[in-house]
Amino acid sequence: MTLQQLHYAIVISEQGSMNKAAELLYIAQPSLTSAVKELEREIGITIFNRTGKGVSLTADGTEFLAYARQVYQQYETLQQKYIGGGIRKKFGVSAQHYSFAVQAFIEMVKQFGTCDYEFAIRETKTGEVIDDVTTMRSEIGVLYLSEFNRQTMIRLFQANHLEFHKLIDCGVYAYVWKENPLAKQDSVSFAELEPYPCLTFEQGDKSSFYLAEEIFSTQELGRIIRATDRSTMLNLMKGLHGYTFCSGIICNDLNGSEYAAVPIRDDNSIMEIGYITRKNVILSEMGTTYIEELRQYLHLA
Image 1 (spheres, helix red, strand yellow):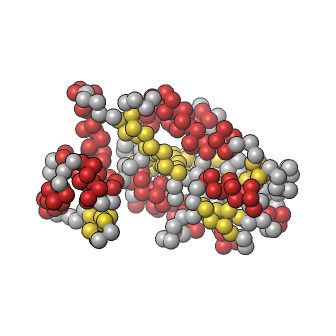
Image 2 (cartoon, rainbow, N blue to C red):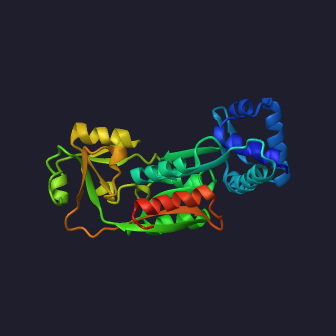
Image 3 (tube, rainbow, N blue to C red):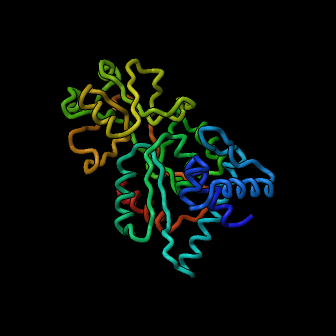
């Protein structure tokens, strides 16, 4: 097993295609395929499922890549520290759709600059947040726990060797456009929300209610519209007077000041917002700075 083989496997997993990976690595596709097959023979597992549409990780491959990323990242760190050569350090965050997570990322990037670093921020599905941290595609994942999803989420964390680190407890708010009749109220009830469509983030065909970003199950709500990104969600709030549930921690610099978070009346539900990391992994300098920025934004510093 060589570092080059590990690098090949990492790039293939990121590209989802042997051909695309070969182009990126400046290597002939048959040579890349041969190198991966040799690696699979040596370690005794199949890393990739190969189909006409590309490649995907097997269960064994997912676990292998999690360790391979750690090893290769340490190799890159050693090169950067002792050899140089212009290698750019990488740092990624995956998160549910939280504007404060993006704002903390912005402040972290400002401190390090983009000349010597390669950054990634991924607002994505809950399952993908977990997968990204499991495979070390992202160092940190930002999400929440609640009484409803806690047991399922903790089992997922344990199965994937992840740790959850609590940041803050929040109540639950309805997030609406400022011209929505409910926006100027001090609080709002479920009955008052009923005439309006509830907006939720799409979690994919294989998802479950336990992975929803919205704390209340959509099974209990009658009018549902699903969206895949925050910008679309905001447009639906404005165009359809829709609402979504949120933590009340809103970044107006990113979302704009045309929206309001109104507390849900007579509800004691709590969102425990925090972040996940791989077990026994020491945060990088960028990861540490990012968490500091999160804590500062949440007034926890």
